[in-house]
Length: 485
Image 1 (cartoon, one colour):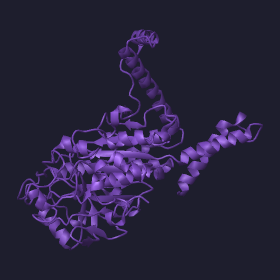
Image 2 (cartoon, one colour):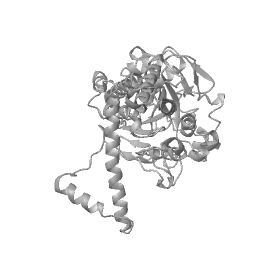
Image 3 (tube, rainbow, N blue to C red):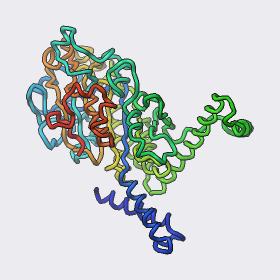
Image 4 (cartoon, rainbow, N blue to C red):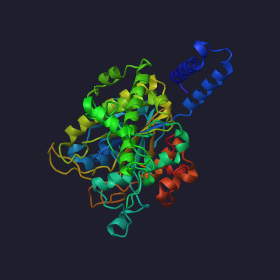
């Protein structure tokens, strides 16, 4: 635990002692009980973990987000494939890898850099707070280029389709869809959320597949980007009529009316809980507005969402959740045209939002407890859609892509999984020369590592990812997925 987190825990411990003591006296006739209660509160606090799932909708061109530098065959393959959308080595923010990256075909590479708009992400990587997981994607089972060309491979349903691959990225590559792995995981970890006043599944980006539970045992609480979603038109005479009407509903009333009452009351309660959480967060003295304004993302959707998530984490005493799962979404990554311009803008927003989020989490003492995952339904083709010097070109839907893991528990400064060798028309290229990389790591393998950190036993991992038995054990060294300490 770093010094900042130790100081924050001590502050919260002292605050609990005061709360549980009579008249603020720590030792009195009830002092022992008060101290034990405060110690239990601190124990609960230290057991807290949050998962923040940041989804980049549209297919992030992650091979320009993270790119090879230096004179090497990997860099040559990158420039040959990317052509007019390649980024020069000089513009990339250099990464200081703690270990040489593993590259497909028994190769390795040390020189990598981040997109010019990702300077803060590069700093976090070099400070060993952030890692990349290379070439992950939806897989039913391992496959090869030859099997795909022979049409004998078992592939994810509707491969390259946005809607289908988003659904599968947040669950498993099967049909029909049954549950999102975040929703199912919350069901498996209900023991951590016994005294909850609001669902542990909290979205600041609307309803989503990731948080769908099995049999809808748990529902997602979808709050607004800036806080509680207030009931529309609930004021004046409408408020009086509605309250009077619902107050007469009892167990003899129609089942649909009872259900409406329950949902309505739940929404009102959740609004109070969120407001209490925000109030508690702001009492810590963290200037959330300044952090996101300085990063230039105070008005952006991704910035607003992450600021609200940070406040919910800080004010968690109001929710009673020790294992909350947050869903955040950023759109616009379907870059068929004007990739260089649009991607620059998108990555600048993402870079600033993650930097501000990291800063406030550190200040409030929660960086070691919060795992942030950033991924997209698929990568983009290595080759551009247009030839020549057309600067307005983009890329097409592909398959494998890179993901980000951020937090105090991350083995930062490393590239995990296996990076493709970027060689066209051979090896991992699932297409005839477009650079659609067969994933070298299944999303279910990566998600299994995160789920286990979050509290799911290894024995229960197949309940989340039934296809996990088709792949190498993600917890064994050869998988190269030890991105969590």
